[in-house]
Image 1 (cartoon, rainbow, N blue to C red):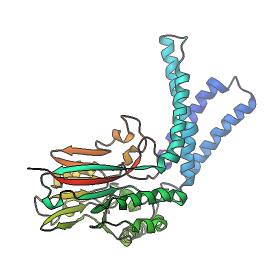
Image 2 (image 1 turned 45 degrees about the vertical axis):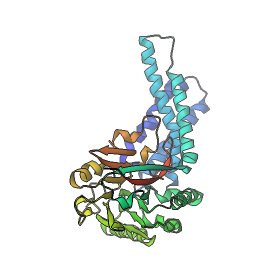
Image 3 (image 1 turned 90 degrees about the horizontal axis):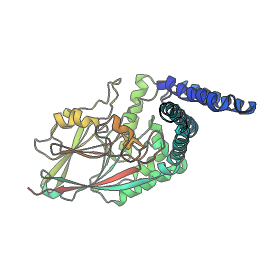
Image 4 (image 1 turned 60 degrees about the vertical axis):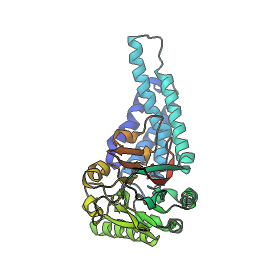
Length: 389
């Protein structure tokens, strides 16, 4: 993770420390303060280089990375904010009112907010989830499926729920079972990096039960993309992740579909593979294979990990009326009216409609980084309704 943006992290640590030292520390503070200031800088730079040397995307276990990110949120980013607001404030004051230098005060306020968001996000914020109910209406839904209920969850990243945190995952799974849904679907990213992460949670995940079973698809984290392994070991890990999901009693859809019957009526649930990383050649989503054998005009629910596939493949290549996806985590951090994923995804959280066809993007439960602020994890109970002609 650090290796992909090393220069960015080093500059984020070093430049604010240089600026703030010259402005507030260099000429006004005793020697011991200066030593402590630069010692903290050296520690953060050294910590960064240690993580840079990690071969995988994240270390195993991930505790060292999580602690590093907390330090960034509590110390480094507040200094970045103070530097920016002070620098901007000074220049605006020179042009307008030299006596009113507001930049420092604004920077301190923003820094305190960042500290609060970091501490809350890594503690209470990540341990919470909500149950959201969604009603979906379609004229194409067969009459026998009016009121059909689907429990939806995604992106559990089980390695982030080790130890005592496992209780949050168990509470979410218990909530899904309590819904008494007709069908349960999981939308990918069951792990961070390795299938061995699932072993600790096998009992909890195997407890999921629904009348029409549990269907799942693979996410990008389920394809061994974030480890430095040879291709043979990568393939072994992928197959193990697939087999473990099946051992839970789940039906894994790999560019394929299943039929669900109610009397003489039926609907189809298709599932695309979830590898959205272009550097890999296996696990690539295929809308055509996923829809193979589904009669034209049939009501179809498409499961796909990445919501970008909705416009890329689902809308132009299929007739699927309803698509369910995850992947974005709703940004994990948000303030009213803004989530960072809004910058890169046209559909990043909630329900969307295009030409009478719909996409639901789940905020997911967990995350590679166990932190949420302003974006609570969720499980969704979707009820299908037949709309009158």
